[in-house]
Amino acid sequence: MKIGKIVLLVLFASFIAISCGGSGKGKGGGTKKFTSRTGWKPNDAKGWFFSNKKAKQKGSVGMVFIEGGSFTMGLTKDDVMHDWNNTPTRMQVRSFFIGDTETTNSEYREYITWLKYVFPPSDPNFKNIYEGALPDSMCWNNKLSRNEIFEENYFRAPQFDYYPVVGVSWLQAQRYCEWLTDRANEKALMDKGIVNKDLYTNDANNTGANHFNTDKFKYNDTSLDNIIDKQKYEKAQNIKNKNTRVIAANRSAQSNIIPKFRLPTEAEWEYAALAMPANREYDLYLDKEPQINKLKGTKGRNRGKYLENFKQGVGNYSGIGGWGNDGSSITNDVKQFPTNDFGLYGMYGNVAEWVEDVYRPLIDQKGNDFNYFRGNVYKRIIKNGDGTTKKVDETAMKFDTLSDGRRLYSQLPGAIEREVIEDARNFRDGDAQSSLDVIKLVQNEEIDKSYSSYNSPVRKFRVTDDGRVILDKDREDIGKRTTDISNEIRVVKGGSWNDTSYWLDPSQRRYLNQTESNSWIGFRVAQDHLGNETSGTNKKRGVSTKVPK
Image 1 (spheres, helix red, strand yellow):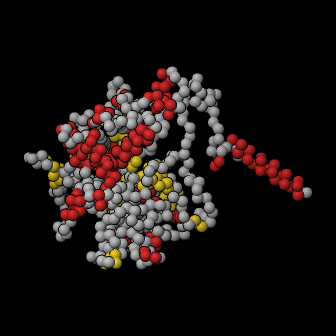
Image 2 (cartoon, one colour):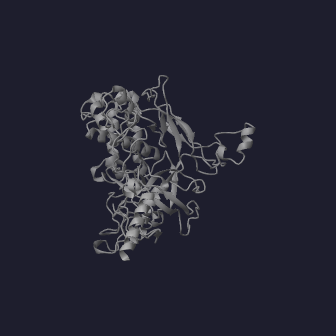
Image 3 (spheres, rainbow, N blue to C red):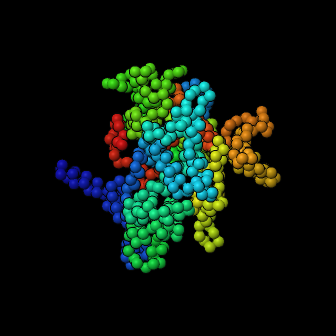
């Protein structure tokens, strides 16, 4: 009788597996084997379509995988500042990668050194590229403090190499991310022999508009032909058919490109800082802020000391001499203190950080509760009349103006130009298209596309007789300005060496104009994760004590 029951259970299990598609599935239910519905096998040497083998995405150097999930974004305690700008909302964040530390002085110096090499400031066409990307060393100035040591040495002295870079505006951080994307792809392709390894030992290969650019590689731009080994590229693309037309057709199906670097969104940053999956029981979070409770040492030499860099009180940034608490009167080495449970350094102090989002007092959960982000500006590639892509001309570059009057390049010479097709920064937030009276306005042809519900000051720049650019204060309609908020105001997250413990709560949020910088604001980079969003390494049920790095 028992044997009969066992046989019935086996048959039933087999039926369930077959009915659920188990016979054609790999681990986790993914497709084990695929054949095109055309009947062609993948990468048939006689065919016309070729594709690389599926591979699990590897994190770039210094990037930590964060498995996404649902969490309560915003403040769940008393709002003692009465800002009411971080009310709790339930959000879903998809998996992503984030830098294990803030970007350091050494890393940012790599960037400006490359700019100086490829776009020499001595060339009149390039004179603003290097200068505009430099951090603002004047950010350390304080009329009642002697800070020349930081103004003169902080960014360049080797003793500060692995301290977080500061004095960088949101716009400058964006340009750094774009540059990092190109250099990471360039190095990866160079390691595979696709990009010539003498790229930086032969000046003719990498000067001005001839530099390597990820977009140009993706779209098979002919300007890279002198640095690309076509045979190795075709081999890497798994192209087995030697027909030149087949090769050309398949070159447009790119692969092996490292996802672009960017700033994390506000939701991603907060989720990564909280590291809540490390403190759960089954599918229930036990405490929203377990990390904050670990910022004071309880054992050994760290007992009683703060394990993060922040201001302890009025006139107390580091503790007393000979018995320092966090030991840092300003910033410190980005790996000076322990990580949180995701393996991230400095999420609760050292410097506050820029994130991608445009600031608004409220998070629009009704508009979207998945991968929330305010700040989308959609662009498309500009084509020439002959179908080729339009490039940035070094004699007709576009610039943004920083708050100190310096000019920051919008795109580097030789990059593929893009044009804005939709600006969604004001979406559902008082712009004309979101107005309750929009239908009436459209019917009466009274719509003003420049309308905004935020009456923020207008930033005006004046060029002096000697060529300097000066930011003038907005004196028009003085007294009528009601807010600082505009589409150029960006969110700042986290506490810093200059902040008390209140700002260490990852739910807190502040803002600053994207053209401005400060001595207490830095940034870290992020990347999108491709494919399956689960790590497959943290499937233990019950109480989780540590998320694998």
